[in-house]
Image (cartoon, rainbow, N blue to C red; front, side, top):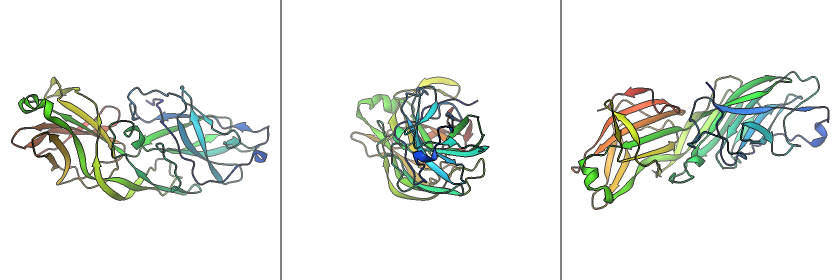
Length: 319
C-alpha cells in the first residue's frame, strides 16, 4: 500500500535545460504530479502528513527529446505544483508520453549534482552531525525512480529513502536506574557524514542510488525519542532512553565501535558491532536493544532489520 507522506524543507534545483515562457503555448496543458512513499512512516517526521510548502526537484523529458529539472511545491494533500509557472513541465501538442524522476534533497541546494539527460545522475550527500533537532529531518535523501506517464494522465512519483535509519533502545536496568541523573546521552561514532551516490541507469525502472565513496568521519548526535514502549522477550517494557538517526549507507561497521554512551563520572561505554551485519543499507531501519552495566559491559539483546515502516521485520544474529 502506498501512503502520501511529506517531503520536508527546501529542494534543490539541478543543472538543467531552461524552458522559456515562449516555449509554453497557451494550448499546452500542465503535467499533473502527485508524490507518495513506498512504505508507511517513511519520512523523518512523526505524523506522516504534508504540511504544505515542501519542495522537490522534478526531472522530466520534454517534447524535443531533451529534459529539464524544475522545483515543485507540495500541497497538504500531496499534489505538486511548479514554484514558477514559466519553469514547469507541460504537455506539447502531439506528445504522447514523458519519463519523470524526482529527488528530495533535504534543505540543500544541489550545485554539485550532475544529471546527464536520462542516462545518469550523481551527487554528494551529507547527514547532519547534530540530529537532536531539525538536523534529523535535514538528513533525509529521497529518490523517485522513473515513472512513465501517458499524455492526459497524472504522474505519481513514488519516493524511497536512500539513507539508512538506526534506532537504539537502551534497556532500563539496575545500573541505569541508579545512575539516571548522570546520563549525558549517546553518539554514533567514527562514522562518515558524507557520501557520493550515483544512479548509473535512470532508464531502468527500479534502479536506485548506489553509494560509491564515503568521507568526513565524525560523531553523530542522534534524535532523542525519550522512553519508548517496546516488546522484549514477549513482554512490554519501557526503555531507559531511545534514539534514532539517519546515516550514510554502506560503510563497514563489523568489528568496530559504533555507539558511545556517556555517564558523568564514568569512562565512556562503547558498543562494538560484532554480529554478521557488515553495513547499514539504504532504505532499511536497524533497531538495537542495548543493555549497559556498571562493569563497563555493553551488550545487545537483539538487532532487527526491516523496512522503514514497521521498524524491523527479521532478527540478525547477535554475539
